[in-house]
Length: 327
Image (tube, rainbow, N blue to C red; front, top):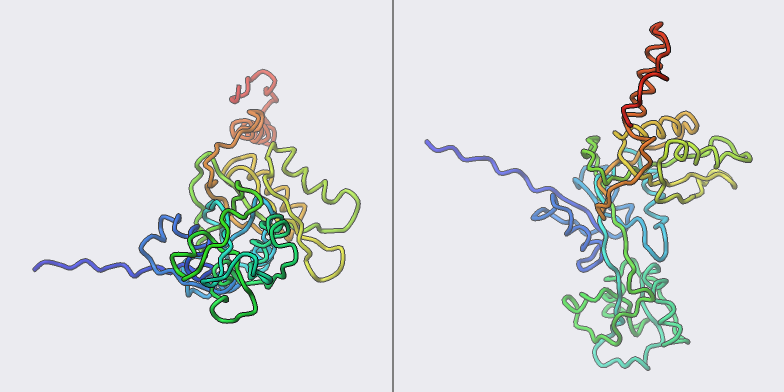
């Protein structure tokens, strides 16, 4: 008798919806999410909460924009919701259109619905074209357009170009973003503790707190990376919230935790900041190989450990006579 093979249950991935958002475009780039269940949610906290509670296997959230910088709500969520790991990142080019209900003219627009980040990226165009306009914040770029059909408080909305596929709107203006090269970086977050294999083009993310508020404390934190030849592609401060002057730092370091220089830097950070939180090591979205000085290669760190083991074992110090394996 022929046996039937069990079909694996579909996985679920949460993203900031509704359909048509830039976050959905990022989720479409996640290989393991293709053909699975996509769960539309209202905010970053809900998306990550789904993962922690087991309602979703993963979530995709916006973490950084090339114009506006870090997305603070996402940074704070990652820093305060334990049990999450970043397993991938994805880039989405960002531009916007101004849309309105059918029959609306550009000169009729007085109030605009827009997500705050989208609004900030279009403010120069808005100020030049509609200098007297008002702004109503929306929870997402698509929600800004959908609100046009739920209330008449706004005359138009800033939305993604693909909005016309989902809503019956007139496009009043195209490419209204102030920077045509704007890109948003998204993270794929899950509960797994498995770290993706190193690719040579990786990034390591962590959160670290300054243990004390004193002169030179931040410099000491940064030196944990610089003295190991590890470049930081992002460092942003966020208030801890328990008192004024207390901050945590969101850090992206070039390299993988399995790289000797990165691992040694993390050990230094852990000794310096007991509040450090490892968020993950994962492939860079741009696939650009990490460039570093060869004096910080894995072989150099291995040589140093071998030298120390020899000293502790009572061997004579012959390191000066032995060429480094790094050349």
